[in-house]
Image 1 (cartoon, rainbow, N blue to C red):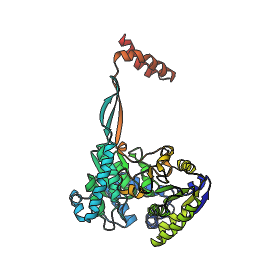
Image 2 (cartoon, rainbow, N blue to C red; image 1 turned 90 degrees about the vertical axis):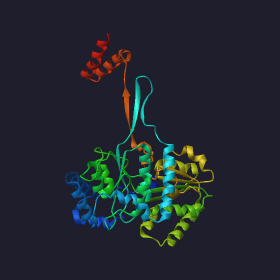
Image 3 (cartoon, one colour; image 1 turned 120 degrees about the vertical axis):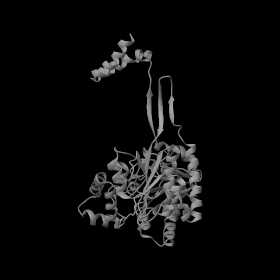
Image 4 (tube, rainbow, N blue to C red; image 1 turned 90 degrees about the horizontal axis):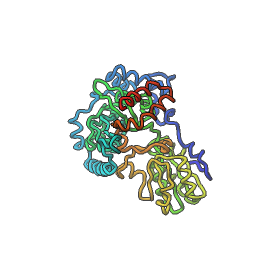
Length: 441
C-alpha cells in the first residue's frame, strides 16, 4: 500500500481508475471480445456494435453474442416461472433463511422511507402526481459467481415503490442457466421475470425490447465495463440509475480504532475487484503502521489472492493532522462507502457531506450493509456521491405537475406571462394567453 502524509487529496484521487477505460481483472472476457470483434476495437466500439445488433436482430443477437464471447449456449432466454417458484427448495436452507432475514430488513427499511403515490394539490389550482414506474429492469452480475444480495437490494425497493413488473437480467453460468441462489433471491424479493443474459446485449434488450424480453422504463444495477458503457449508450431511450465504477471504501480512524477491524474491512473491499478503491485516513502514525502490518498478515492468511493483492497494492494510507481534516478529505473524495472508526463517530456526522453510505463505529462494517442492514448496497461510485444518492424507492417513481387555473387566476397572472413571452420573442406564446384574457373580459 502507498503512504501519504498531510492533506493530500491528489494522492487519494489516484487510487481511482476510469471505469469506462479499464479492462484489467477481466482477461478471459477481454480475450473473448478480441477473438470475436478484433484487436483494434475499443470497448466503446464493441458495445456500439452489440447494442445496434440487439436492437435490429433481438433474441438472435443476444444468443449470438453470449455464445461468441463467453462460449455459453443458453437453452432459454427466459427462466420458466416454475423454476423460480421452486428455487428456494434447491438452495441450502441456511442460505434461504439468511436471504429471508435480509429481505425482511430491506423491506422494512424501504417501507419506512416509502413515498405516498397519487395526486396531491398544494392549493386549489396546483399540485403534483406521483406514480411508480410501470416496468424496471435490474441487472444482477453473475456468471462465475452469483450475487443474490444484489437482487434483494434492487428488487425490494422497486416493489415497495409499487412498480408493476420487475425484470431481472443476469449472466448465465457455464451450463447456460441462472444460479439457483440468484433465483431463490428473485423468488423471495417477488421478481416477476428473470432472463439468462448478461453484458451489453442484456442492457440493449432491456432498453429496446425483443420478441422475448420486454422493454423497460428504467435499468438499474452495476456491471462490468461493457454493461456500464451499454447503459451510457442506451440512456435517453430508457432511464438508468448511474454509471457504476469499481467499489470503494474510505476508512477514517483515530488511535483508538482496531487495526484488525481496519485491515479486515479494507481486504473485504479489495475482494470485490482488482480495481476496488481501498483507503484509510488517520491522525495516528502508530495506527497507520499497525494497520499496514495487519493487512499483510491477514492477506497472507487469505492465501494472497491475486485480485485482492492488486487492489491492496493500489490502496493508500494517509496520515493527517486531525480527524476534522480527514472528514474534509472525505468530502472531496466522496467515497461510495465511508467507515468512521473513531471514539465519538456521531460527533462528525453533521460535517460529513459526501458519501454513499456512512457506517459509524466498529460494529457497523460495510459488509453488514452489503447484506443485512436494510438500506440498498447500490451506491454512487467514482466521486458521484457529491451529487448522487443510494438506490431507494425514489428511484422507482416519477412526478408530474398538475395545474387547473381559474379564470380569476388567469386574469391576475396572464399579463406577466404575456410580457415574458414577448421578451423571449415568442409571439404565439403571448397570443395564446391573450386570447384567454380577452375572453375573460
